[in-house]
Length: 444
Image (tube, rainbow, N blue to C red; front, side, top):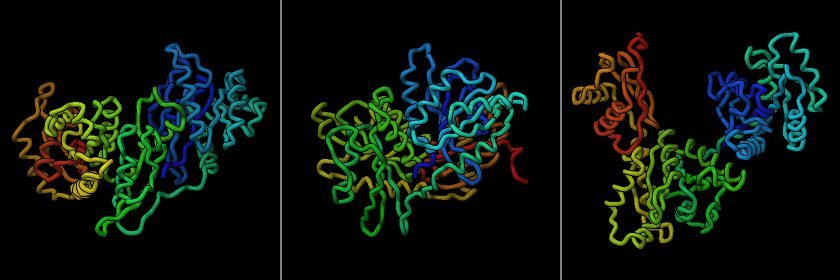
């Protein structure tokens, strides 16, 4: 289930991104004295007092954007406020109360959520005294902090954790259950196929795009094996989303991919591959999830392009979605149910591949063979050398390769090695994780 959320809210240039980066522990949000640098919501998981939650950095309320994106920024802030369980209202000790602080306070009074008023830039005891002036905002106790110095951050996090709602555990199912997320653009037939699998109209099915706005878990069984199909909201371009509900659907779809063990990527064969399809493909790769590409509405594709063959369409898919070239493809029909259970069989096969552990000896033989077959190019007269590798974990299969200097390996050579390991070790249809470490990091 989704983690609890905490959003940092405030006018421009009060140090929201600096506070965000300090809490996260490394620089993610851009820090700049120019107001309005942060436009999108920036989200990162944080653990404090044994509780993990998502921390959200936001743009400044009331910012004037030189690229005329102020309305988009405000929409992102609204979504963050609605999505958050706790709000950190950040103000600037040095500046005192500004008119925009009062605007923010008025806006937050109506949301009905726990709010922590934190006065930032209290770098010294002398400046910290100025924090008391913010009591006049009527937001309760004022907590002086310094995102730059780290003062008061521990107390802030302690207060945040106390205000978080009780932790909701992910749905648990008795026995072994394979979780499969169905993702894709809107109106690609995800819900219809899940209803076929469930044998009942368990999920709302509609020919109107965007019917599903939340992730729904559907438990079903086949030949004594239990599955959970995760139905997700259809994704589309961010600029075309109608309201915050659609943003929530997108976030939950992304989280559904994260918690699934296999992903079924639904493609509408009757329309060209779009930027949204490519973004979904990148999400699947970034999460390193086994993926079945389900080609739906094949009958409509044949009507639109008479004479098209499955082989020709496969070549087209590989060209448009090259990062998923290894993913198996299955033609299906949500309307007739054709090959729906074939998708599930493929998902089982992919999960079995992703669960496989290879011996260190077999891995190193494969690495040596790949290295001898194709040596990397020298970088500034230095050659990348592989010493040995080992498999760290499964689901996804993850490997660490010890070498002379990780910086010498190129992305191109990593793609080559990954392809060779897939072929040599029986991981032909799933993504692999490869990490490089210097030989100095080897444990004695």
